[in-house]
Image 1: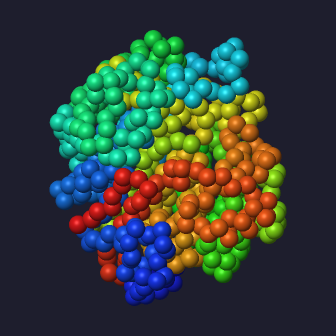
Image 2: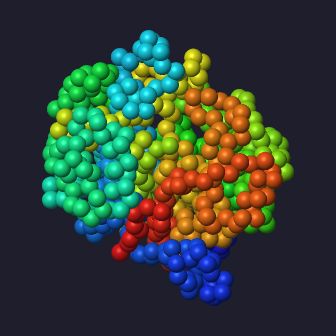
Image 3: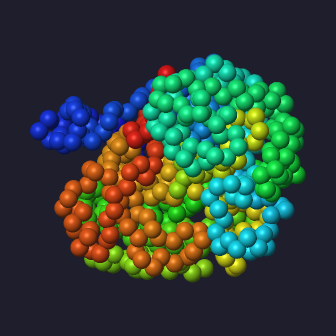
Length: 572
């Protein structure tokens, strides 16, 4: 498979790939590739009957086992997410939230799910004022909001699933009891999170082996999580939100001086929502509307569609500069407008319109980096997974605790950490995202989907907090404008702009800074500095990608996974 550009323009007709000779391979490559781009880590995975791409190989295998046992993509995605909550608790778990986009083959339609939780009803703005806080703390009891993931599982299963929750959670329960070998990157993040939240009650008992976080290859067990999963499998959704689990969470949070209560858990509900899209060079890119940040990717693409990116080239100062300036514009709107739509009138249709993009594009200088950008008028770790089945269903699912392992609040003997997503609320009066009781916070985690002529083409996502809209846009640009295939689009060096406004403020006043991965040339870096950009190195901040592409002509799936993390794409 060559690229979305060729796939789309030739109705996914496969074309031959030119051989890249050793002389053209970068000296930084570990080996010479025979085909494809020299920076690619491997070729795409191709299979007929099903495909799964997750951020941990054991979770990918669980998904494939479900597919092979007759389950569909929705079943497999739930099973994989549960498995990731065990094997990758450094990025996800049932203490966090979930968003999904589902292509349902039976109705030939996309469905969006917002399974994010709300703030505690008893916590008010006055409490933060009394404490003299101008920001919500990163850790501890105050940033905790209701975890929505489990309700998300049952919403997905009841509408689209074919297997029981007992069947879907059985693999994770077995692994939690018997243990699994910890993979390299997750071992690293375990150690990092111990430094952040290791002193909170329950961390040592739940996530260490004799007081030390598990090392690479060490067998780790989580019997408490196994017991929690068993209660959910047999007792259903209400076992989590209205049973002993909810009571344990409420009692623990009260002991810790928190506000999340049993009543908050019992009142939770998720929402089916309509995905929104923008057409980029003839192809419909789909995201979910706020309280998430997905439409920022659409805003970036709308502005960049006005430029000849292919003519600029990937490794060029002109492209990087134009991309960064478009990102700045989108993120100022993100800071001002993106919030819980039940509390604000958010002009989504206007923000993702072509007319608005043309207006905003006029603010971009081709030669000078913007140091201040106003919003228009009228960091965290995550997991992303995608699954496709032989029936034609595809799922794009993302789930997170927010800052790695979340708040540090580990309810007694439950085996998981509660999220700290409430940290994203602003404490400024008049802000769209200001803290209010029973309100959903601004969210960074976003699934994505691409269709062509109302047919499914690609489900994808890129983990990585506020970097996600930038990386979504780059994946699309890499494939459509720069002719990369599914794996190459994720392996290609990435651009990250940081330091502009956050959901707590709506004006960028210092221009921020750019971090470029090592594949960009020194010439490009020098020219960017001449345009007034500040360059700064970053390590591990460029996100984690998984994707599945459907080839209509040959009726096969292509899978790709992130080379920067422990993930795997596999099919059968």
